[in-house]
Length: 540
Image (cartoon, rainbow, N blue to C red; front, side, top):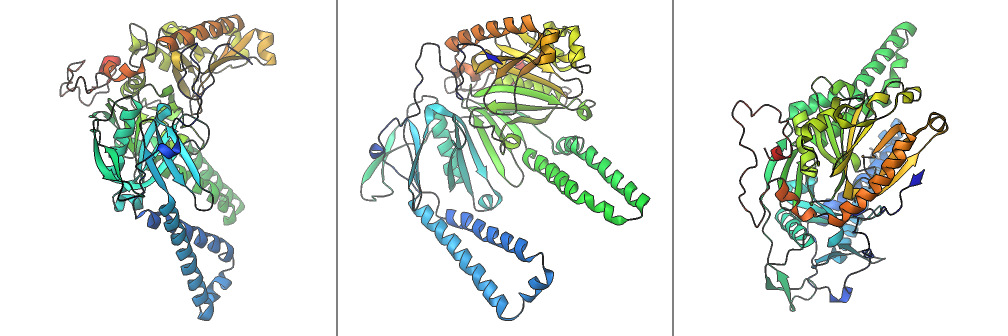
C-alpha cells in the first residue's frame, strides 16, 4: 500500500497546511485552576452497588454449578456467614465509592475541563475544549429514577481519551453541556458572579453565569414499529430461524432431543442482539441547533448526544437485502473520539432505520452541500445505480474475474465538496467523505489485481464504522485519483469554515434566532411522505 504525501493522520480535525500542530499539552497550570466542584452526593450509592453485583455473580458461577452445595449454604450457620460476607463486601464497596467521591473533583475553565481522581494514586486529567468532538448526557436507569445524569466528553485522541463526569443533577448536566459547547465554539462567558470554592468555603471565586441552552429544531424521529420490524428483518433473526429449523429436523431424524441444546448459545446471542438494537434505537430523535447535531435515544439508558459542527469525519449509508423492499437504510458516522469497538453500535449511528428521504436528510445534516447541481440524483445513483450511472467512475469489465457479483456497483464520484463511493450489490453501501476530512490516502493491490491491471483506492478516516474504499479500479485511474484527491484535501483544509455549518442548513443561531424556512412547509398530504429533497429540505 502506498500513501499520498502531505495528507494528515491526526485523529482530530486537520489543520491548514503550514500551520504547526498544537501539541496535546496542558494549556494552563493546574495551580491556577479554581472553582473545583464535586459530583452529586448520591453518586457513591449509584456506583457502590456494582461491586456487590459483581461479587454475587462470581459467587453464583462458583457455587451454582453444584446445586446440592448451594442448597446446603441456605441452612444453619453457613447461611449467616454467607449473608454477613455479602453485607461486609457491600459495605466495603459503598465505602470505597464514598471515599472516591470525596477525592474526585472537576473544574471548567475557558480552555479545558480538569478532572481529579484517585485514592492511592492521584490522577489529573484535562480535556481541551479546542479538541472537543462530542458531548453526551447519559442516564442509566437508576440514575434516571433519581434525576441524575452522566456527562461524557469525547475528545480527539486515542483509546481512553474520553472524560466522564458522573453523576450530576440532570439540569446541571444540561447547563454544563451548553457551557462547554459554547466555550468550544469560541464564545465568551456572559458574565461572572461570586461563589464559594468547594475546597475553601470562605474564599470567594468568580463563577460564570450559565449560558443559555441553544434552541433546536427536530428533523426526524424513528417510529417504534419501524425499529422493531427492521430489527426482525435483519440478517441475525432469519439466520437464527434457519438454525432452529435445522436443529428441530435433526432431533426428529435422530429421535434425540438433546440435539436441540445446541440452540442455547445462538439463541442467547440472537436475543441479546435484538434487544440491544431495540434498546439503543428506541425513541430515536435528531435535531439541529447552533451547537451541532443533537441525537436522543435509548430505552433503559437514555442518551443525549451533541456532535458540534464540522466534527463528523465520514458518513455511511447501508442497506441489507431484507431491507430492500421497504427501502430502509442505516446511517452511521465517524467522529473522532467515538468508534471504539464497544461504542460503535451505540454512539456512531445517525439514523438506525431511515427511509430514503430520511437518509438523504441525515446526509444533508452532515454535508448540506455536496458540490453538485442535483444532489438528490447523485445520491439516488449511489443507492441504486451501477456502472457509470450518475457520473461515477466504475470498475472496468475485467474486474469481474475478482468480483463476479458486485463489480458493476464499485464506483467513485468526486464533487467540489466530497468524495462519494458506492459498493455492494447484495449489501449496498455508500460512503461520503468531505475533502477537508481526508486523513490519508492509499492504494492496495493484490497479486491477481496486479496481473489484471487493477488497484483498490483506500481513504483512511478516524476509527469508526466507516472505512471508505473503492475496489478494483483501473490501476492508472486509481493512481491519478490518489494524487488528485490529495491536492483537493489540502485545498479544502485551507478554506474550510465549519463555523457556518448550521446557517447553511437553516438552523436558528444567536445572530439569526428565527430564520425563514428554506423550503415551504409540507402540506397535510405531504406530511407522511418521505422527503427526497436536497440540502434545502434538511430542516423540513
